[in-house]
Length: 112
Image (cartoon, rainbow, N blue to C red):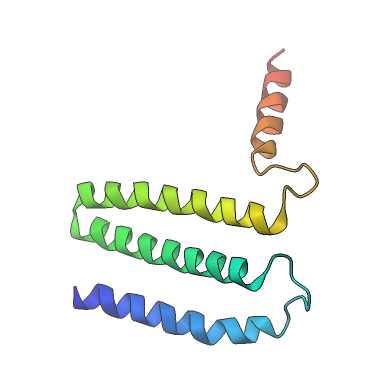
């Protein structure tokens, strides 16, 4: 348990150190409001923590716990996509799943 806590602590510290340096290059008028962007950052940090915990469970051989973390990770990714959609909109009708549809169309086209 101490090891996983230290991993989480180090990753949060690294994120805290990196974020201000990244902010220097950020767009002066980013989309969304500060509350929305902060929520998105928190969700992304939580996603990273869930991934680390899942990986720890895998290393320890606890497949059931790892599977539960996979479900939590899927939920967290869904929440992040929703936050991004609220902030950035639909990007002129572009949808993150379009590449899959295009790939499948291309594959089906070659089969004909």
